[in-house]
Length: 455
Image (cartoon, rainbow, N blue to C red; front, side, top):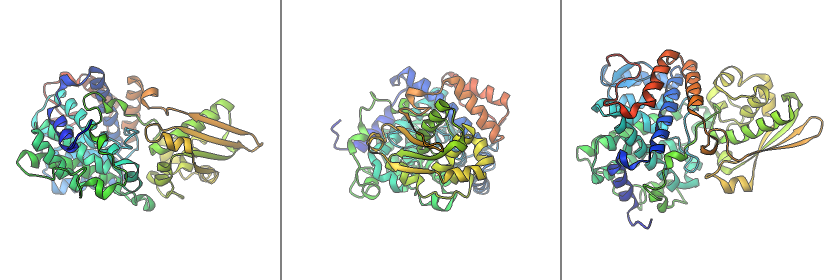
């Protein structure tokens, strides 16, 4: 699409999107993503950074309200519910990801959308429509900002702020002009830097909390007439100017209403940074095919794209569970030892001496084929050298969870049950009841609480 003002076109799309415009399979996929997010939000309940943000919200926000904080089962304002739920849903590293934009939409879109929907008494169909708007906007902003942006900035914190504004703004029925102003206010607040990984700092939870909260605030401000920059994305002093060297404005309006990027979003199978998943699947393939024990592996070379090196490279000797999820050596060590890199493995074994020793056997190597395919495709390739001198190759073109290798609804439910159990966030009967509601949420006249009676 040749558009002289792509921000305006994108804002008009988000403001005007109707449920009947969205193909039925996309709406069903939105339900899948909502259920997947719900499990991730509960998994973060016991996380120390999440608890600190929840404590802050308790001190600063109202002690009652119609929007639900899932981990504490209390009601508060939409603003603080969105912030806490967003922080919690990005803690376990199990929330969804869109490959092409390297963006985790669920962690910022659903917290903002659910909080506003509960605050205004919106229907389930309106919640889904707003969430689709948030996904479509946020993914396109992430693609627009490009690979150079991701080298320094956490896209979920930056593009995510605009995505949250789009979702909240759609629920508030902003006009196209108001939506444009909401984008302006969201974009000027967008932030999130990768430096925290070097220190095992807590900033990742702050990124999603602020993205959801700031996006929501931007939408509410716009509904009251507050103005924002009209070209916050592509303007001379906008987001791309300050955050990217390869931004492509055409990506902002790429086949709007025809290409549904929400349907391209992947589910995360392993409980780690998505950049580790392709190599993890490829190593598991080698181990399974050759019945290979961990102690028979002399070395593993993970053939990766540059983004993996940029994000995972700084983590050499992980000091925390969360930092270990950004360590290629740790993830592959868990795969080799347990054939799984799940929540329980990280929690109990990330610093096991066997895993630490295996970490030293792993190297990442930039691969031209893998790098050229990224970010549209995340190819997994490994070379394994055994202690008896064999050289074994593994390759996975679509990691588990990608649209072409997706999770069924039964698998999504089982994953959500594991997440809720891990975080002690909800019982199995409570989760089963939530599943039933989510699968039928489009028919709900008013989105109520999931876990908080009477809030």
